[in-house]
Image: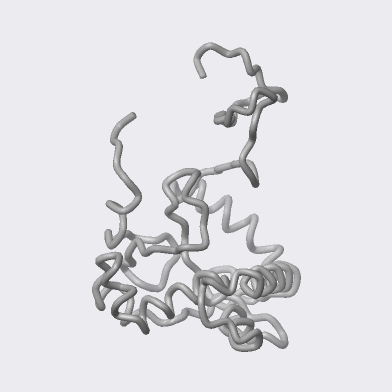
Length: 192
């Protein structure tokens, strides 16, 4: 272990996000993700991820909410939704479109956010057209694996896998396992 810290200590840190329009962005709270796995730090795409859009709007529009997490105006107010993908019928900011269509006002609108996310992700992947970068005008379904490999090759990303939900053994213990180059899990492995 190189370092131990709480997720709260990461909030407000400036970071350089690969392929982003902005030179630097900040780590911000997103109350709809699981904090039980990894760092809890994820890329935010408010143009196409309804959770991200609602969270950004809450941070931009509610000074008290910002203050609760020690987020300053300069970390959120100047940032606009950046169009990345265009979807026919949804425009170039599908998250904004769906949040307005479903009248989602808060990250507490969980059922509506799930509906919006499922629809925008499905439509975006299958029918979306890239609006920026070297893969502009390509279908998202074609561009995504190419961009993924380009980022890995450039050292800007790495493959990461995790289970969709908590994995529990027959003895009711939570299982924490690293991805290895094998087709089965050796649960008796002492080094775990």
